[in-house]
Image: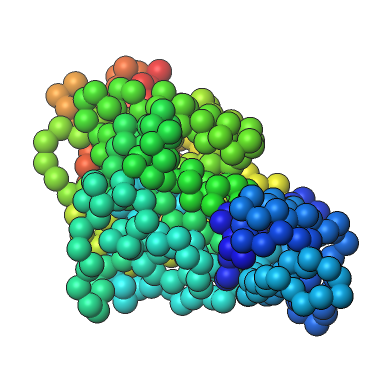
Length: 457
């Protein structure tokens, strides 16, 4: 007997709103007969109240796996009988199965994980990953080993040879995200690893899904279906590869299409998405398209329902573009907070910080103008690790005229050298350029999003 879809050793089955499994698995056997199942779990062994399933040689069988409480681990024992009083024709034991929440990790290198391994968070046996070689196991970094991927698209677009041993880089936000969701919900967590570094929205084009594992979208969909087709949400970190003239102009439309297709293909119209707003890059040239992607991502919740954006502009890098060090864990927790807000009953929390209102007023001496920036969803109050920085207002000569920032609960008062009457028509930014210094967050370490340009009036 062989299981093809939906039930494997060490996996996490998606729970339903009643905290019970509601999965379906598909298998095959060279024997005909009656399939019977028994589930052994913590402190008990029970025959589940399922009808026997008639198995015919050579045909796939499909069985609903309902009613297993969240938690585990469970062992699922199956046997095929030709007659109740005769020995089984075929048997199978699927071991160490958990029931909880399952999430897709997708996007490019910052989700794949390129932080230094010495900052990897410790594994937890209640957090599992469906690795890229199509096997479940306890989740530990690196979650994405592209050189072992079953789907040929990863080799075709540069999976490369196995990395050197011991591995130096490979930490992303996925494991920290799952551990925080475990803390919030109290149920096991499963991660389906699907990211690939350097990839664009065109490479994630859902119209290529019929290519299955030859396309990134098709590979992601195949992996979700192989795990039973049921998930709680998607964590997405991508956009760096679209920060150029043509792709940047189409980014919002492509994200709308991508999210719509994922929801349609998985039959879940309200599937939660959390998107990381791209952070920094150490490079030269014109940052207009980079900042355009950031601004479009900030505003995605206006265009796509049940989508939240987790800012990362204040986090440290391990090289010129990849989130690293202990800040990979900070990002994972931010992802979990945003996802918890979207996923009802999955560790509810406050929505990410949003830009709420911008006004202009006279400064303290009446000559210079101030810009008052009000934020929504601030937990506690805004703070910084020192002098608050990151805001820019440029005068007619393209000179940054911000000389100070004061934080007051959910507001930032940006002091400029421009008179109040001359501020209208100027542009306000937070995080302008490729590699800005930004350090403002709330009491729960949730960052203010990068934004701009915002025309002052």
